[in-house]
Length: 250
Image 1: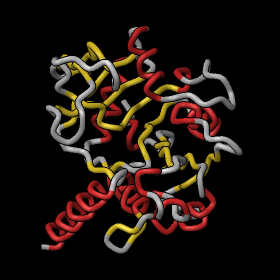
Image 2: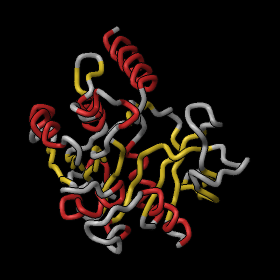
Image 3: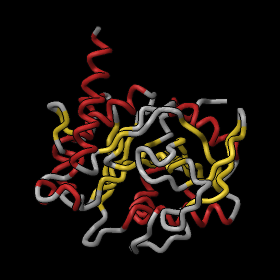
């Protein structure tokens, strides 16, 4: 079987259209994706990570100050990537609505990740497990135990195969939620096609709907996530990337 993560048709959608209110006032004039991390815009670190994992094409779903991101990154050729853009328009569409809007650029199956996340996992393994699961969506999960953020997933491992989500909620949490939504999803376009065009929709709601329909698989990753959604997260991510670069050079 062709490895989907090495297939140019396997696009990554990056959700980079939010207002980033936790980082105001700086993100009132600079989009979160362009915040400097160790001398480079954060999105450059994301794109370089994706390139190292065999990804060749990325669609940046942008809204607030999105034209600044487009101006900075262009077509991605300086990073040896193909980068395209999908603009929300006059009103923000939410995480699922932005993907619905971008479907013509994404192909039949694709990854989805957030614009403030750095996820150093095995993208090829995620893609392989998604293909074998035969469902509309897959959520990556990480055994968090409430350490890095609030856990929100009850997960049952599937051995060498994709596992099963027993419960998922960001509001109705249970003592059995030891895992967290890692922030990397894989979907077939069909999962989004019934969403209303041009209307705000949330990815959390789509995940919950797929779970109820038995169309959501899960894959456990073991590398912790990093994020720049808060000043503390931004600092921690910068330290991680600096240490990673130092190890690479030594």
